Length: 479
Ligand code: PLP
Image 1 (cartoon, rainbow, N blue to C red):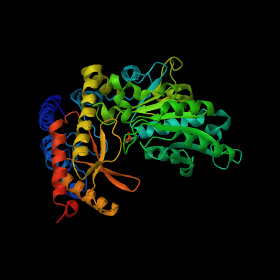
Image 2 (image 1 turned 180 degrees about the vertical axis):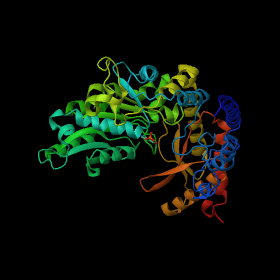
Image 3 (image 1 turned 60 degrees about the vertical axis):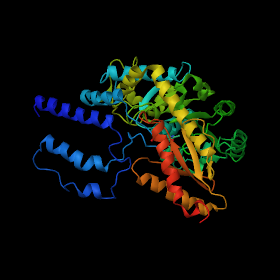
Image 4 (image 1 turned 120 degrees about the horizontal axis):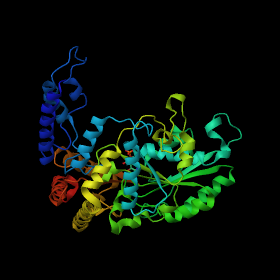
């Protein structure tokens, strides 16, 4: 492609993106497509000859955009809401253009060093003290997998790196603990590492869905008495269902006395610590061994970008470093080679977008937006609290509210059917997108605020849609 063509199409595409970002509500947040609709509009085989980019971009507009769930839509309140900011988009574009593979310092000196700098800035923004080493991964799931692998490596006597786990009569059963509300990535990590799903012990929670430390202590004691070895505890700052916050400080004390690795999953909630008055979210984290937070969730950085920190980088390196001859470099003993800190060899230049986001917003700009999201969520919670027939279903310390319509006299089964129908109706509007979870036997709706373009009017509109949907409900009142 001649470079002049690049200039032309890039300008056209940037114009399109600018329009898209200026009018993020132009498209329904959830696309009106059915499974198979998108693929059916595309040829089943690749073109034999190159096609013009004009034709390709026309198909993006005709097929891809209408088949897209618009995470950038300000009415996106499902799961954990995310958003790409302008500096983040530009960083992603530039990273693709530079196309650095920072597997070694030598193959990407700036990418390697910027990753260290950007993660150290983020650490400071969250009010965490020094002594942490950070690497950027694609997702929190991978960061947690690495944490569990490091926890295993932190017990060299087990010799798992050299001898594996299969057929080892000398090896005690290794146990991982997390709350019943921890993310499924903990289970997946244990499954992937061969620790066994059964060995992820789910600890009960208190009324506010926080891990109960007394139950954790009892579980470890019981396991030790049965000859098992407590390996790792995963505490969560901001659980997926309700954003409950485990008592990290107390858990850390216990882990220290039990010689157990503590990994903190702050994938979503940890990011809120960039607001100075929310620094206490990080209480006790200085005693943990590792931590993950996801800038791609609540720090306006495009997916993917997960910040993984450990206070024991040498253990992580011991778990993963393997240097075939072709990757030996002169300076390897004096630099960070990112390939040493995880499974993959190749590394995208993800730190660029994060660094650009932090610089462009500044500490105050980031804090201001996250503070606003928390405030909006508190306002929404107030509307729910004050509306007869509705109820809040969990504490809402951050920007997620769990709630439901619970007309008096209805059974749990009726409430589930009612709220599921209400949610589907609201989602079908194209103006808002909510998701649900279960708290015990209660089916509850979740409204998560985290999109940079979400304002009060979007939250108010979601509330209006919710109430309108229940007004039609046969269970909503007499008659
Ligand atoms: N941890 C928590 C608390 C989460 O809520 C999520 C996803 O929502 C994850 C981990 C997984 O994140 P990722 O998609 O980056 O793997």
